[in-house]
Image 1 (cartoon, rainbow, N blue to C red):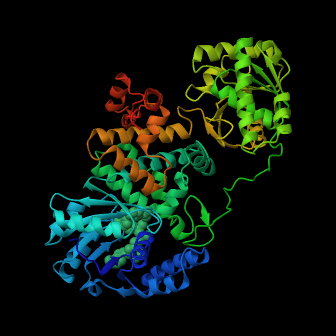
Image 2: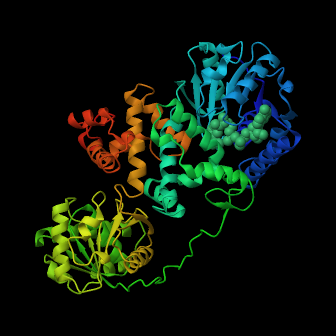
Image 3: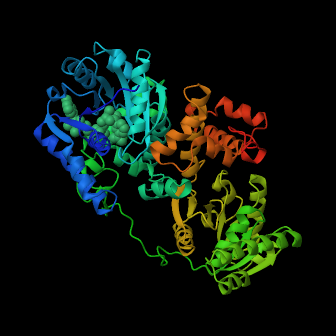
Length: 596
Ligand SMILES: NC(=O)c1ccc[n+]([C@@H]2O[C@H](COP(=O)([O-])OP(=O)(O)OC[C@H]3O[C@@H](n4cnc5c(N)ncnc54)[C@H](O)[C@@H]3O)[C@@H](O)[C@H]2O)c1
């Protein structure tokens, strides 16, 4: 029989503590909520009231239930109030000495059978536990932010945590409607170990002005379907907390440079820019604690798609290639009203592409997303050709041929001879340096990357890749075109992986390394990222969809260009590819797809 928890204590009512109080009180458990001062108690109480009031306003919580919930919370200053609770969860700032002091005090105050839990994200639960005389009753219960919403709880057992304490806590998580994964005491556990390298890398992109905050966040939301971008997430976590987590992970996790906090984070913490909780972090918020972002001096001025900054007028677009991307891009431009000339390597290929575009447009009609007239008009805008000479008078060329530098360079050299002056020449490459392609022409200022995502008609993101030779006019034109296509164009520099792949693939590679180290299972790691961080797919699900060979190739490119030791491809990934386990397309990757 699992132990009955009738009352619990929560220590520290900041970003996490206030949410944890809500989780317990919502599930009928009495909570003693403890802070360091009366003012801090008031802040915690205001957070809980605000959150439950919002739930009532949204119709997710009845008024009477809210009142009952609030009545279950006993607000107190000082740990002495915790003498009779069955379990305490500590959620004070991420400092080992502070946590150890609190645990020593809790050990003195709490009844002998009480379980003492920490919500630490990165510190050693074992080191915290030895500050007490009951380390076998100390455990990590790591909730995710916001605690009332995120389903995951990481239950962290140390080498001395007793088995029945683990079982009791697992049963409690179930009662709270959470999904738990039980793991051992390693820096960052599952989710943060995979998340924080990515967050830190995103901050370094921002710090080096590789891309703007809006573009970095939009890229990861729209390119990967994440619920929020990395910089907005840093603001939600709190920059002070994020700094401490990174710092601890760097020290405890093998001094991986990717966890060494980017200097900007420390500067922002020192300047009091802590994120949402202080009203300003990477973004500016309506007021401290508010989730509402308000414009500030860094907010870009939108032109509403109007031609800006010397953008050239584009009416006629050439699209070169006959693969999946070219087909999708033809549809995108034709639907948006551009006159399109598709160039392939032969009439047979053109016929196939034309068929594929028709099929896709027809699907739109069947789904009620496109009228028959609009479909016919879109098709009517496309001319099918097998010779590049027909691109002599287009305003923009989008190249989407095979991902081989020699082929692309030869094509751009031909375009340079054929196209009229002032044409924007764009490549859709996802991994080659755009500058190499640009230098195959005599007009590198007119060359830019337009990295569409697959399937192009559906994915809302385009990465606009500027080389060091791309002119402002070319870039402005590319931005205006993306806006006219109804896509979000994000501007970045010409570095391996651009924004999305550079941030995504090292994280996937880290997940493989975690599996390889037998820290957790593929299922639990997938759960952790989906339920703890709101990712639409776990890393192993995604790797199997993308293809392990493709993932390995991208990871190799990143490693070769950036020489970051942490980016070295996971040996397990290489072995699986060698063994022909490429993911869904070959029937087996991290999972066996032939049985499902
Ligand atoms: N922020 C996140 O996204 C997140 C997610 C999961 C876990 N965590 C972990 O949760 C813990 C708390 O982080 P946070 O982001 O909520 O921090 P926070 O700074 O928002 O809140 C900490 C609170 O603890 C209070 N406090 C400080 N000393 C205290 C004491 N002696 N007694 C009682 N209260 C005290 C502070 O007044 C403050 O209100 C950390 O260990 C952190 O790593 C954070």
